[in-house]
Image (cartoon, rainbow, N blue to C red; front, side):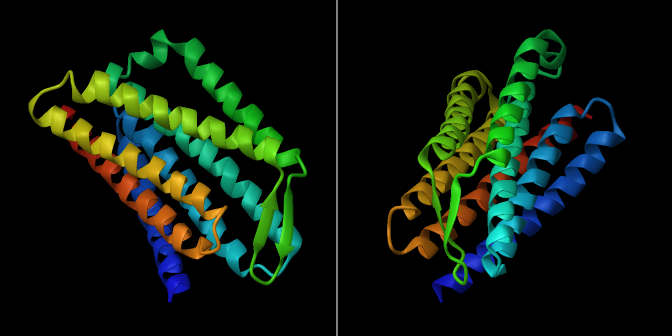
Length: 232
């Protein structure tokens, strides 16, 4: 029963993220002003690919397929959070942030690319049970990955709260609250995933991971689409 719930939330995350990506990118490329829609569209796209790769590797009875799909999913999460970081900066500082802070933009892109390359070429995943897709991670590459996504989310949460929620009023404040709640849901999901790696009932925590990711993504998408509709 728990496994069915997990698959439900994995499919929900995949479908909601990919559909959100379609509408956001369609809106973002329809006008050059909707940069936040574009960045969040790519963030949702990568999140959807991550969830989809998780579904596929759960059924893959191949050690190579499990390792490749796991690595792909981790790399997708890195880039999803990078574009979520860009989205947060634009919402708070406007699209002028892209031209006035190019160094930070490229530094973050360089760090994300370097970590993704490390995840792609390192031999840190051991498949302990092919039939159940159970794996073991070597600590160093995984901790670098976990620290990176944790720092991005924590920084984004504090920045959104202090520069977005506390300094805006009215409808804008309500939308920033949705963005803030979305970030909280995402970090809660990743915490559930971390806990699941150390307990026996990992399936339950996988359900919580994708449940939080799905809700978090939808909250953030709502914030961006509503804000851009107002601006246009």
